[in-house]
Structures are given as structure tokens and as C-alpha cells.
Image (tube, rainbow, N blue to C red; front, side, top):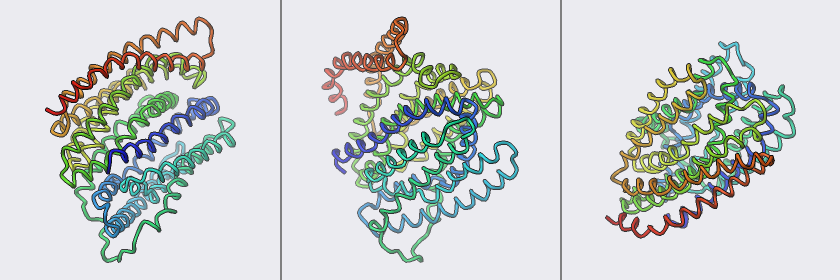
Length: 478
């Protein structure tokens, strides 16, 4: 695939991620005020539980299917065979997961009705074929689907969610739109597949590879979803889960645009790896790292700077603890962005997923141990600190494992160039917020001014950094 196609697919993905940023900006202030921290915490806690069953239902098959489709992109017959093998495999695993989930719900007494409606997410796994479109690098249809579903979801939230008693209805909207989105993608499939004899299907082949791809997702679940579960169990305070969920939501919004590049890279680098085009892999990887660092550094410092003004007006009263949580989580913008390119973007498509598994397991164990101690002392803040430390370990290991495919020294050079500029920008933005508050300006206006001011300061400083582009190019040729 040409570089132009990478850019086009990234633009499709990035445009959707921008929509994902806009939607919470519209709905989160409304939902946080209507439902309150406790209901948000219940939704977050129950969602974390169902996620374990979703994890088993997918079992690494999405990543496996995406990569295999990319490997055989030129053969319609092979793509059709892989498609139906993965679909059958997912169906069997999801049905088993649903049976186990129903048994779990029958044994629980707390939030039983909420858990039942959360099961729609699990059912959606059967119909999720977005991995096929990612494998053929057709991000246009994925984005079209997601835009339609998100807009329907927004309309339903404002139409039907009016009081704190509407938690169940809110969960139905979230899970129902997920199911609808997965069903929409099936409309395009008849024109993309050919008939494959049932005898030629072997849905449970490549068990070892699937397990290798599955292992990182187990580990990732430990320090993304298990955090919420442990907060609920250790603190016995659903509001802490609510604070944690809201702060994570903002960081995910910021991360969405830049991490969407990793999704685009997987099929592209897989194709180059199949052709043994290692020079092409290195060139694509380094350009991706440059873009990621350029964008992620100011995101981290910017979120830290605007949090004290942004959180109170955005989420409303009762969410003061989200300020410090958001500032802690802000470091993940750089950390996860780098890890996403190194792990999902490079290690998986070059068939080195076992190294990614090792890194992720190391981070997961670290996160679990730290959670046991830090949550008891600092509640949700402890879980956030543990996540940052664990993600840092994963990123360092990922970059170490891909050192033969990238120029690590150049990555360090870019971090040294862009981070100081971002820190200076963040300090200016932070103090500007205090000055504007003294002038008694409205919170939303202050945040908008801070964003424009930060972008302007960073652009001016970075303009001088770009003068050293020739030096970086010389380093890449070595």
C-alpha cells in the first residue's frame, strides 16, 4: 500500500476519533449531571465485569483475523476462508461465554438487572467483523458505520435520559448501539466474499498463534479493566469508580486520534513484512513515531494545565477528584501512544507478538501488585498511578524489542526536542487559566482560550525544532 493510502486511512480513522472527542464533549456534561457519580460508577463497574467475558469471547481472534486477511489480501478465496473460520470460532467461544456469564449473573445479588442488560455487549461479539475491514484496509466503511451509530446514540441519550433513574436505559443505549454498529457491517459482505466448501474450513487452526495474540489482551485487561473492578471491591465506593471512569474518558478522547494510526499500520506493515521489505517497515515506523511524539507531548502537558478549569464546568459539581486523576492519566498520552505504535503497529504484524505478550504481562503483574497497595491508600488515585507506572514499563519493553526495526536514538532525540516545548507551553497555559479566572470569565471560554493559546505557543517553539530536520534525516540513513 502506498504512503498516500496510509494517510487516507489515517484521515478516515482520525476523523472518526475527532467525532469520538466531540460526542463526549456534548453528552458527558449532561450524563454526569443527570446520572451522578454513583450511577456512572455502577455502569463502569458492571462494564468492567462483562469485559472479562468479552475478552474470552474474542480470544485474540480480531487481531488474528485482521493480520491473516492482510497476509492474503490478494486472494478472494483465502480471504473468504479466513473470514468464515474466524466467524465460526468467535460464535462458538461467544456462546460459551454467554452461558458462563448467565451463570455468574444468577449467583450475584447486586446490580443483577444492570448485569443482564450489559450482556448485549457480549452478544455483539458474535457479529463483530470490523477486523475484516481493517485487514483489507477499508477504513472508510468502518468510519461510516461508527459515525451513524454514534449519532444515533447521541440522539437517544438526549431523548430518553432525563433522571438518575434512567441508568438501565442509558446502558441499553450504549450496548444497543454497539450491536447495531456490528450488524451494519454485514450489509457489505455479500459483495466481498465467495462461497467456500464447509469441508475446507478449519476454524480452530493456529491455536498457538491465537493464544499468543490473546495473551496480551488478557494482560491489557488487567491494567485497564481490572483497575475498575479492584477500585469497586477494595474501596466499596462506586463514586470512586465514577471519578476514575470520567477521568479515563477524557484521556481516551485525547488519545483516540493519535492511536488510530496504530490500527492503520497493522495491515500496512504486515504486507511489507510478507514482502520482506524491511526498509519500508523502518521508514513507515519512524514517520509514525515522529508524528506521535509531535502530537502526544503537547496533549500530556495541555491536559495537566487545563484540568483545574476544565473539570468543574465540564462535569459539574461533585467531580472535584477528577482533576488530579486527569492530571495523572495525562502522562498516558505519550506513554500509550508510543506503546501502540511499537506493539500493535509493529510487533504484531511482523509476527513477534510473543515479545508483545512478555512486555504486556510484565506491565500487568506490576499494575496488579501496585493496585493492591495503592488503592487501599489513595483509592482511585492509587489505581491511576499504578496504571502510569505499568504502561511505562510496557512501552520501554516494546521499544527495546523493536530496536532492530527503528532508530531508538532518534526517538529519544524527538522526545528531548518536543517535551521541553510542551512543558513550557503547559506552564503558560496553566497560569493563563488562573489569570482568566480572576477576571471572572466563564469556564468554557477560559478552556477555549487556553487551547488556542497552547496551540500557538507550541507551534512557535516547534517551528525552531523543525529546522533540525536535516540532522534527523542524516541520522536515519545511518
